[in-house]
Image (cartoon, rainbow, N blue to C red; front, side, top):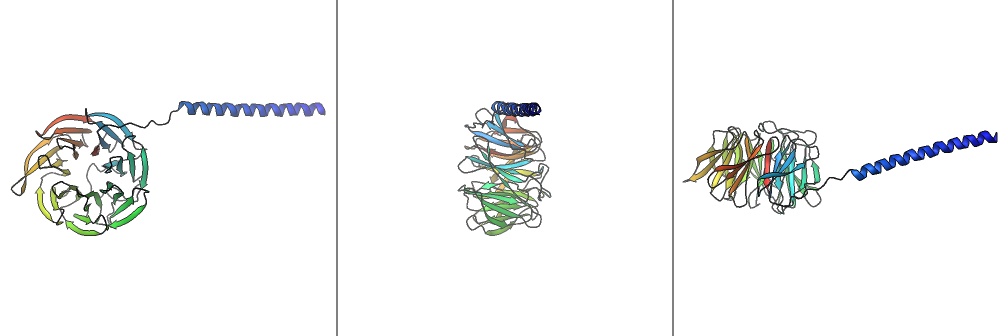
Length: 358
């Protein structure tokens, strides 16, 4: 009996030792795996750069401005259909709108709720995603106020559009402001004194006091405005996709002071103070058309062929260069502003839309 008990104890001990050995080997294997799987390495974008949002590649191409080459690619953590991109005043953080919907074909019925709609806050140097803000409705963009302590996010709803205002210090929601139907871009006047929201379905622009968060006025513009773009001449320029026009709005008076008939679907409007020119991307024909004031009338002075479905415009700090995203060509065109010629064509990701320069 004692012999049987001894044999049984030896068997149990052998099994336990075997199990312990297996667990140790498994732990050692896991430890070895962890030691050989490096953590993601932060980027080091410590140079002047352009950040280009690639709508269907779902990432950001970083262009080194010194040689106009793509130096880095920032991953967006599996997010789909990123759209426009904004830089905070301190030039340390980016805000990228994740729409979960392809807007490259236009903005008809672009609002509503889809899974994954959010704003990503990205460090400009490391490319790390510091914060994700989930939202209920489509966010066309997210714009920082002039102090950088607030982030304003439009919410595309066909019945009651809103703008959400977040405090950037702790990302708490400060205000929800009712605007028009299907708001697209939210922008600030160049001096930060007023906020403009393009109500695409209403054909109007809501003007908001950034301090009180109250809607000051609603301005009728053209059909399907997508954004009211700021200019250093004290104006805002609304691009109206449906009526193929641009409405000039005086920041001081909140009145429409000019309407420019284009004859093509606009993608974006930007004012170049160096030449006192108004640039409008021609999404229909893959060009940029530039205008100057002749007397009191904005007059077409020429066009520059860039690429299919020309979209956003970003000028360099001194105004001497322009960078144009071409959604249909998957490129960025670099233009010499003084002679209106394309000097570089840079291959980026698929359907590039938003662009910002740091």
